[in-house]
Length: 277
Image 1 (cartoon, rainbow, N blue to C red):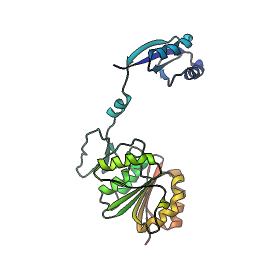
Image 2: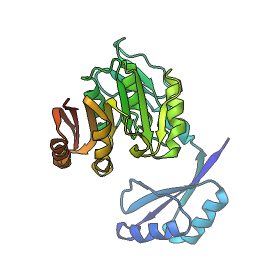
Image 3: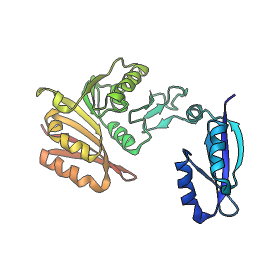
Image 4: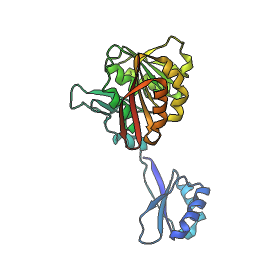
């Protein structure tokens, strides 16, 4: 059985900042503050008794109480607490190790693990994009998912009847995660492009473009997005702060895009627009 070795020390409130600094210099990785009747109580862990005792010996004035406890498997602890996420009215996301059946048989349940990629539906910006996607007819349409992350928006589009979806990413570390998520959801291999939108030729057009990226990332791509959105095409953009939406709306006005719906959650704003014929 594996054990973690801990020490609980005590000091006056006004001394805690300096003492914690000294402890970190001595090799303590993290400190956990505890409730105390007076002053401050704090706890640190080490992997070996020798390492703990060496640190404690440097600070006799902190009156450490020492002990050991069974080491916690933090990965297992985290996994056991993961639950399915209701992203939108018809979309659920579950981790691969959690069995789940949606209460409504017509709902879509995606199996996703984020790993190094972004997008499992828990962030407001992802949920907003999914909510807007529910109002779009994907049947037989071509989709471009810019900055796909886990592939959640592409997968949602495909499950809603899209003819095909192309994903873009600039981080190579997300690609194995993307491949795994597509396989787990029965969609074969993704059509992933590792690179920027200038990788596409001039004839590349998509009926629907979805993008969940912050303003400073998406605005440099606006010329490519305008070029790649087919006539009468639809564009769903999320990941924007509501206080900055005027930057996006100004762009749409210049590009001739017509806004059809805006939604907000907390400080985040998302929009659906379409391109005139």
